[in-house]
Length: 176
Image (cartoon, rainbow, N blue to C red; front, side, top):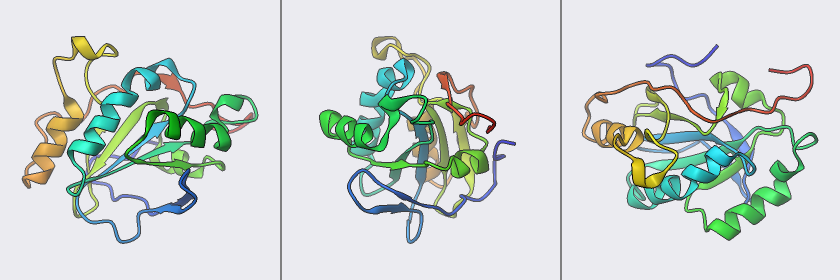
């Protein structure tokens, strides 16, 4: 079951590609949790835009990408490959590994990319897509940016949910 608007940010601590624990402990301000991976063409279409959002909102919001894919079935999504992808793309956001897939299940995440935006009080305020186009040149609606701006101003996003478009999370056999 997917988190509902208003639900609290589930606390977590996961290994990050930078060698530290990526955790929700002590975070202030809006928090974006994006379910992510390395191999999905949809993630690759949006990764520069999420990186730009992380840079543009640095100091005002936290962006965390979480890879929950089964790396045994999809070796390109393994932890060493995550580190390499983050280095290649110079990710300006935390990239963490949910090897057990427990966090993805707690969120009810189904796709990569799929974003969840929590306000400064830790309540879910937006869930869905980063924007409305896999092609950066075709973007007309900047859902995540608009939601971040609204939440940062203490308002509710004009659009609170959109369909997440992307690859399905690659669950371990018998999971999900």
